[in-house]
Length: 344
Image: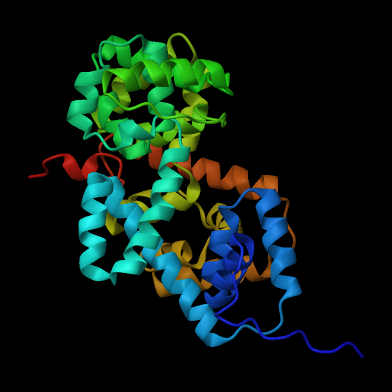
């Protein structure tokens, strides 16, 4: 019989993969599963193999890694809110000097590896002033590389005609030649007196547009999509499907959930909920009578195996209902500009 593997001590110098595996083991199963769903397939395979190779992790080592992850996430948020100087000031107050310095070095390394990193330190208003007169392709390249929140703020501030052109270019962007990115980056950086090198990475695409428009106000979103629809209706449909998916129904308030449920029969709802998260199921069931919930649960229990394509089709029909009701102003979806509208 093989000897037990030694416990992982906190003094060990662990690589990023092993730290990720220990972090996932430290979380509850449901949270770990949600994190795994967000990882690329190759990363999932790597971290799964790493988890399988481990047997015992000292609690102190696990605590240190969880704490390191928390501090990194906190520092990243500070950087996004106010840049490295702002993050440094806050971290120095909340951590000891050596730990704060270590975290800041890691964050700075991550930031400086990203294309157009120097622009991420510029507030949105100044960045808009800086790039609004650039060629739409240059603006598209910049917006595809900076955080979606900031990119959305820039997009909203552009003239309507330029918004359409920029969105079209981002949606059709796949991989960009690193030399092109470097030339554009250096040209912009020279004007801000800061040159930053970078490497090629996949950016843009329909997903990037959907994420930006999700964060934009409803008026901007509607104007852009309506203008695009006459030229590229298929593209608009792709964007809309990515902007609001079935799990996003959890963002609808209770009154809106009830409006959606009025237009769905029990059989379709039971089918759609087959792969839904427990959180979404609870949200929907809270807006139904006990008898209706019992019937839905029984339908789901005795339904047996179903094709995933049938489940997805039922979910999409419910999403279409939610989108139609939102467009009609009958429901509000949190995070999609509705909270900015005045309701009297």
